[in-house]
Length: 165
Length: 155
Image (cartoon, rainbow over the protein chains, first blue to last red):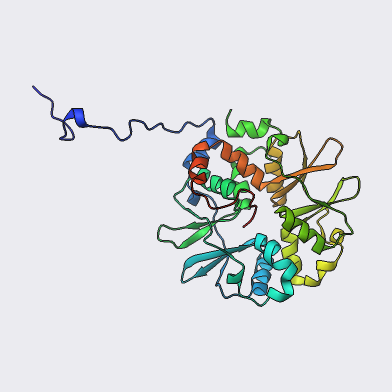
């Protein structure tokens, strides 16, 4: 008796879309964790955000008071930029008196690189390595801000996984 | 070997180290910021002629200065730098960089040679690049179409 065909397609025409897929191989548990755990599993809050019209001086004082190296700039619940210690060095410090009252939108980095909570930790770290951004916002699938991956949080996570100290 | 074992066994010199920018303690904070801008770095190391580090001035210190005392831009940088700062040797295991970042809540680590002289900088960027080497597929995905310059060390 003939066996029924599962797909209804002639067997000769069936092409398995995963036939060339090679599952990732991990050399140790840390690599596995980075390769499989999701960004959302790491500490991504709290974060601070301001509107794009916030004066630069106010933004810096807010960062200083909170000891944060980064502010997310949002408008209508959407990320429109990022303002960090890097912008302070590159665009603000030497011109401080001239720019202190200007809006942060004039010096923020627009269209920052971001990740989603469902991306892997390895992907987030590779974003940092390749793009050079140290602070990477985490957005939900509908574009709302969920948090931020920061250098301290990455080192905290890695340190917890390697646990040598 | 895997990432965990490599962190414990490979030396700091294996990282993609960045040249350190050294400024004398009597330079102004403004001079230090100009040096940071020119080198695309978030810190400068304060050292005398012997290149032995006596302080580190970071963008985090700059932020606090601008918020509370912007006139300090013209103060000697040696007076405003952190004099307790983390450093590692070229032959220390890479894990010590991670440990130092975690213990000091910093992302810049000064690297010294066998004589205790400043020879490089490392920290979060170097460590991320090292981690990324263990995930070449992910790096390939990021490189395709990335609009950002490789030398960027900001945001």
